[in-house]
Image (cartoon, rainbow, N blue to C red; front, side, top):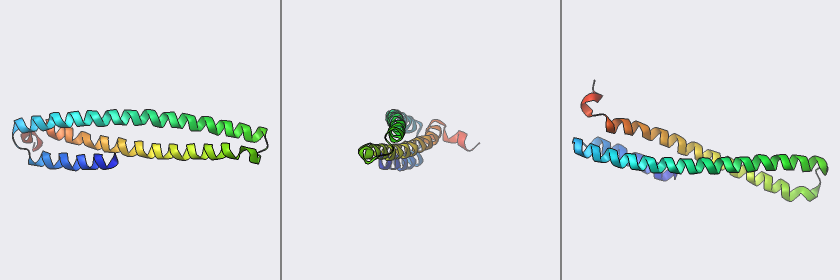
Length: 124
């Protein structure tokens, strides 16, 4: 997804510079609006997944802490420790991915402004 966002950002920047007529700009703005909506839906889905994994990770952290205290941190809890560690690491990767997604989408908003503002208004 990161690669796709990077490619789209380069593509829209190039097309924004090349497009001169108002009709072409309107068509490009409509295309950008649709793509931005797709990226925003993707961002929402990743936010939900990230929050879900964060809740599961926190729940398992509490369960592991409670079980550790109750069973004196014995070796029989090793699978629980491993599962909790894996969930925590996976949550970290999801948070990083969502962070990158959020920042790229925020960056795309500047192209929306450029496309919707006529070039004559930019120089003022």
